[in-house]
Length: 233
Image (tube, rainbow, N blue to C red; front, side, top):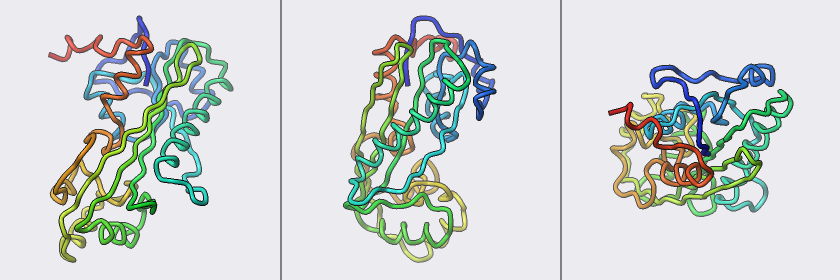
């Protein structure tokens, strides 16, 4: 995520436009901050600290871990690849407006084993059984492309311990559907918060975007992170 001295953002009650193609990106000559993600959680987190992206530019990358790739390295690589894909879309569109481009990726792991972003109930059930009664790690990488073409990144590691889950609890959670598309098969900001015994690190990073680190990256590059705070009071 990034910063600048003057940026016009959409009103807080107005959702940012989704720029899913180079043509749509070209139609955003005044864009100042673009989130390279389709994640509603990451958008909501940015909005939580008063940042309203001017556009969303989802980046589709292959998230398959490479052989012997450490979970932390996977998170960093995927965040970088998302940033590169979104940047390429901007270039194809011929957009030369001063822009901060933000990407992020979250990886949940037990030891060196990377848990999937569960799409099927069986996948989510396997994740929950593995996480039951033990500690796991959540790695979230955030990358920023600055208006001057610089690149900045941060990696945040958090440790989360789950209670021992009963079969009934797992079945109940599967029935909620909340797990779908979530790394590790759960959403800490939802019903699964009842499973968390302890969290060491960044709650927002576990949700999907480390807010302290993101704001610091943006401020360091001149983006007016606090410009709209007065209007939110």
